[in-house]
Length: 637
Image (cartoon, rainbow, N blue to C red):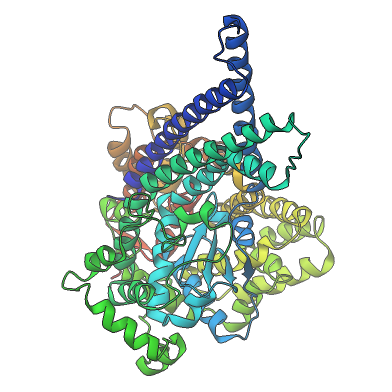
């Protein structure tokens, strides 16, 4: 199952979630109606049928209203995205400039996996009060994602095990599970709220000897508690139905990513063998149980949101015997596991890095091979990501991590070489930013002049957490500055323009997570004009000779629109054409995007080879369509 198939599956699961929610609401409404009729004497003989049905109708509407308002309230409270969920669970943000070893190890692992996945680095949180081994990823899209781990995971897992857990969570990020999970939190609160109200009334109600009028109220409250139990039953059934198979898929994706089962299997064994397991102490665990790495509540097998630990371990290590957990538990009871000690014993901090191609390197690629890489990072991508991070100069990495330096650094990435275009950019930037930012952006542009092209996107990804911490007005000003730099005089390269557009989209998504991108439903055939424009521009960017560019364009068109009569005519105003094309193409359904990307690869690489600059352009274009590509296309020559 590739990235596009998983996106389709996530859409189908969203529809299934709606149907399950409707069934749960209907069951709750019927139960409340019966309780109210019983308490109010609705079944007595002298009750008029019209009054009885009026009471049922009023009760049903009131119940639906309470459930709807509660769900909307919870969804609204989560509009801030992944960070809101992490903070609700007691998460503490990991500082960018931390000197704590465990924090730095976690940040390094998360950064490398994000860069290997081709997505912005998420916000990172630690649940300091939680001794169990657990983690989750939350958010509406990759641009507002947050990854949270427990203190128990930091202390007890070595680097390989932590890497396996984070890779598991990133599979949820890439598969579209996060948006489904956060919506599930909202709808579950709606079907649980009546039980919460009933418990509050029983806790705070007072019944005296002369308070006969309160008896019906307390009876209704008791009935609401019963209704809450029904809601809890349905909620757990929904979570179990949505989550179980996704956990197996996330485990297999993590192994595919890290190319070793030892790390992930080791983390699962420690959950089974240490006293704390994966349980969380937070009172809000029920609400997020479906998005955790391990069972944080202790569900019975009927309502379990995760497969049994032994089954997950055996899927990774088929020869593993359940009896071995007894020996592991006894060993860890005598000597509690320490991730730091294991790292030092195994020498996991002294890893070799693969070599990286320079800007003159050529790659042999095929459209199906590139499509297969979308949203599907492999172990070599993780190794390359570590090499990319090491290759970035330390002064630039520090700037990417610092709140006040991230903005001018990203502006510097968008600035053209010295000349008229940069002069125009500097003029536009000075009109929008203060003198310090404008001057620093120019300084970073000079520092970045010799930076290999392949390091630009990883550097931008590293800067996203620091950028997100800026106030909304400053982020809006940043988006305006990106637009101005990429439209300064219409002569900015397609890569620089696309990168600027990508940064604007990611910041916009972070500002409005709940209203951000969702998997599209438009047919590619209905967006043919915009797709043809993009095809012509990439064919032109990949070939200096107009004749070769036309042949490349026709090769891409033969894959995507074989019957279309669309001659090769690159737009005279490419930036305006692209501005109009992006929003339309981003709403294309997943299978249509798969076909489009295959055609774009064919257009860029018609001669069978692709340079680093062209590969990075393709990565930016795919990321702008929310189809992330790993840091290097396969087939480097």
